[in-house]
Amino acid sequence: MATPPPFHLASQAPPPARRLLRGFAFDPSLATKLETALVSEITYKVPWEDNLQPGPVGEYIEVVDYDPASQCFYAPVDLNGPHVLGQNGLRPSEGNPQFHQQMVYSVAMTTIDRFERALGRKAFWTDRLVTAPNQWVMSEYVQRLRIYPHGLRMANAYYSRAKGSLLFGYFPATEDLSSGQFPGGMVFTCLSHDVIAHETTHALLDGFHEHFLEATNPDVLAFHEAFADIVALFQHFTFPEVLRHQIARTRGDLRSENLLAQLAAQVGLARGTHGALRDAIGRFDAETGRWVRHTPDPTELDRTTQVHARGAILVAAVFDAFLSIYQDRSRDLLRLASNGTGVLAQGELHPDLVNRLAQEAAKAAGHVLNMCIRALDYCPPVDLTFGEYLRALITADMDLMQEDEHHYRVAFIEAFRRRGIYPRDVRTLSEDSLRWARPGEVQDGLPGETEQMLAMFIESIGLRAQVDGLRYLTTREEIWRKTREIRSALHTAIQGQVAKAELLQRLTGLALAEFQAPPNVRVRRDGHPVFQVQAVREARRLGEDGRMLNQLFITLLQKEQVEHEGNEHVIRSGSTLVLDLDTLRVSYVIGKGLNDKKRILRTIAYQEGENGMRSLAATYLADRGEPFAALHHTGA
Image (cartoon, rainbow, N blue to C red):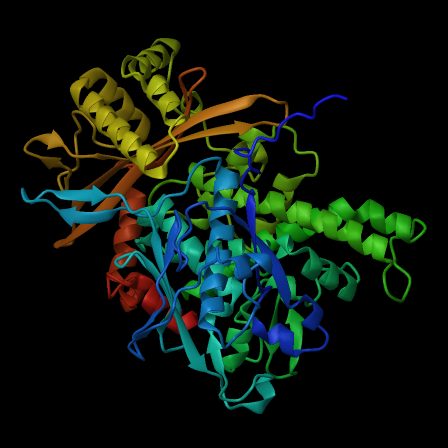
């Protein structure tokens, strides 16, 4: 009889890819309604962390449950406890602070994971600025974002760059019985998926484009708010049970009132708004007491300045694009289910049809959200406008998906046009016109000899080899330190090679070499141009044809003192260079240069408050340390 092979006691199962944690799908209000009680709770699939400590405290975030109003700490939850692991986390509860900690951790980590999968690289928080003994301002690596589930006793929640934190408030609901909430009952913003995802996105976006907090035009802060709403909204489509429930309830018509398009319903109702805090496709009409769908108005953007209202126009445009894509993807299913008429018979939909429609909605929403996140790489680093974001969306998608089988790009262009969102300086709204121009297409330009010189410059500093080294680093701090070295080397190389600096100056419009600045503009220190290599980001993405896209995104920044009508203004300029690492060619130069006099005058007029009106920059950035505290207090 053969001897059985010995057991290897050292061998163990590998760690799981995900940690399962229960939580509220939207907020606690769904659990108190019979219609939605069955879908009020979901199980979040959070990236597994081996060294997760009580708090929870992991690689990216640290939950600190201190309540300043009560001057007390709540005991931290241990998600590795056997009883907690055995039941997929603590049971959802409004009255358990440890579940509140679990909830913010689950949603924040899910949001971070979504960013990293879309971008194909690690996420980072904004650096902490410290003053060294020699008075130089240095940047420090920030490993974790702190989250305070009970940090405020008020109807507010916000991201604080100064504290490197998310602070969530709690407050009593309105006494108005018509709100549908328990009068005077306590509402915790840390239990709202939408509020948590929104604030986490603010922190992620700030770590990506830190100068998007500078309100140089009406769109900048509005974009911050809109983008945070977009991420929160489209994460709704990752909840299978809720998605199927809403598909069945609306009979597949997501243009009608539904939970998927609404943000922070409980917070909005508790504050007495008679509806969700924001809605991507409709609103509550106080006169009729009914929900009505938004009608696109191409003139609305021109007369809307309030940050949330302006951002809502961008959110509506993106959601309209998604709805068109979903409708196109599901048209064949509706034809099959209706014997070719496209009109479904009365009654409840068949469960199989609901499942298939839900699959198409989830797939379309995932693609749209990935497009929105990837477009961040293709944005100018300062002074962003909605129209430029549309160009970034189109360019990023054209680079990755040359063939647009389901007409995603057309859906975006049409939806933005219907909302009056147009880029400046384009002749048509075709895909080719909206794609950022390549250097040789807009300059007299970039002849072969010049392009070869630029490629030699990139090769001479070993940029490709340095980026290859980044890909084999395992920790975020190692990546941050290596990236900092690359930025420093690139800065030194530009300063040390005049001919190459002149070439980059011609491409970017920044003062990197000899620059004949206008008399009222100062961009030098001790006779030398002052600039910053603010970011170096690599990306490896697989295109539809199986071709790997190896890219490097380099951000150059510069600020100048501009004198206008006797007043001094600080104007920031910058460019994003998109490099193809395989060919060592510059694919795009996306930015705002010193030579754009119209932009500079627009920025000055906005900062001063045109026509005697106080600008949004003054309104929302009066407290430079906490812009979102004021912004979210007015609009949450």
